[in-house]
Length: 339
Image (cartoon, rainbow, N blue to C red; front, side, top):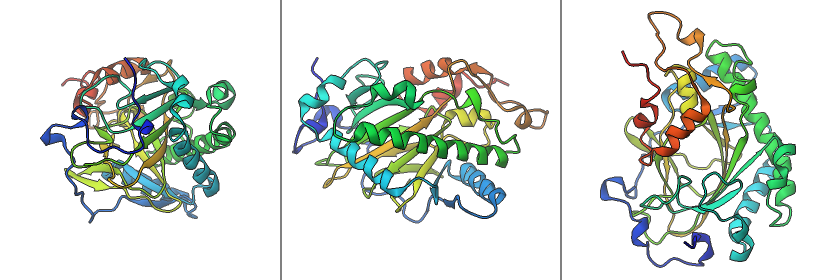
């Protein structure tokens, strides 16, 4: 079956039936504006205070934004611009990356990574492992010009920031600073280029449906177009772009390791009627040979027993990708310890 990318059409006049969500899942047109996702200055003089701010944001929202993070803004801008340029290339230049096989890397697809799920979400996506650079650089796209070179510069910067944030979180949790180093965060770093073309009726469909990420943390780089929303106290809150800020959200693995202290945040992406939105996200996950479970220091006595059993990361990935509803409770059910 031919894969039809949304980005291959200049303009969409209607939302096709297979992109239309059931009424109870549709986004409507409004999200809460009175709540603000926390903004954390990583250059603060008191790093213990920075750790505590991250921990507080993780407990309350499951997501936060960082400023003064050390990644050059020009490099971020170049990365986002080239990602958008990739989707705007002629169809024949993108065709070599198209695949319906969810295990293929790199892989270009439309809708959901898990496969042909209906309704289809309103996005095109390039999924590619990028770190370690020396291992995966041969997979980086040759077009557009400078993309491969920019990815080789951007990838270690993103990885370095993620490592720094993981250390701050470990300290905030009362763990050793390097608790999350090694194979706990040593899986291949996955990068997603997400492209959401203008949508003729944003009230009918979603860029990505409600879900949690399977990773430890995800770093999201976005330009000037809004779209990300997180669920907080049963309300959708817009995470609007902030100049020079990077969004960081907690995934399922962190919920397990923190023994439920830091919740995986449910989030979704809404579309825009007038302009395309391009983002670059980076997922930090455990290595395949890593045994994941609650940290002993956070689940070591009767007052705070372990909520989850230990498991290998591939077992979790298999359960996650087989859950076509994206329901967070279904994702975690097989790993909870039954009382």
